[in-house]
Length: 282
Image 1 (spheres, helix red, strand yellow):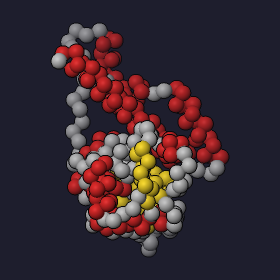
Image 2 (image 1 turned 180 degrees about the horizontal axis):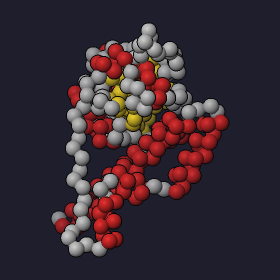
Image 3 (image 1 turned 135 degrees about the vertical axis):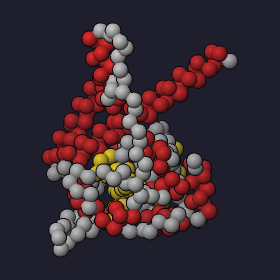
Image 4 (image 1 turned 180 degrees about the vertical axis):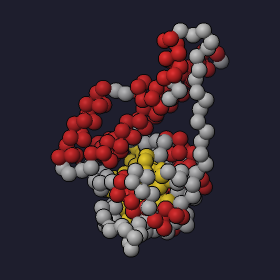
């Protein structure tokens, strides 16, 4: 799996000029902007999406570009509700980065070959863009042309997509982005974890607890939910709705950021506990 230094070396080998800024871990575009301060450039947001056929789509766009999952589903030919945010496991397995570190540079991973790539048309006009070098503790500033050079070096066709476009889609006008979806490769289905069962003779409360943990995603959601985050999220969504944004899509994006933050914090805490335990024994 390639790391930050590998990707920097690759950029240098392509004679791509960039500026690098180190900062603390950031999980959202807003946090990244706060960490960078006066650094010039437009921050890019990245979403890894998945359809019902287990195909993956990496969307890279300006942070301010609204992304409607329903509209994108129709344009890709996956139907209404055909797209959802890919789980964190897919981010790690196919792009080789941790949640919060998504970047188009991760398309260089050998396992990313089957992922379809959508690049926001707004990126092309930006004088400077900012993206992660496979980790969310640093940011790179470069030009859109530099990004194009990198993408072509990994055999990616550079095509800009107007994500705000709402084309007519009917029998005479097929989905305009369907060829992109058709070229994506479906990922293998993961086996569902074995359901938890209560031992014979268990009490009613024990049975109820076992039944609850048959849905691990529910248990994880209840364990990591922070009321303060929810209040902040509600305020953010209210402001976005007032500005005309799609509250459903914004909710999905914001909740995914919260989920990824919880994932990263849990990973760091587990790593720290393991280190402490090993130190006691050795």
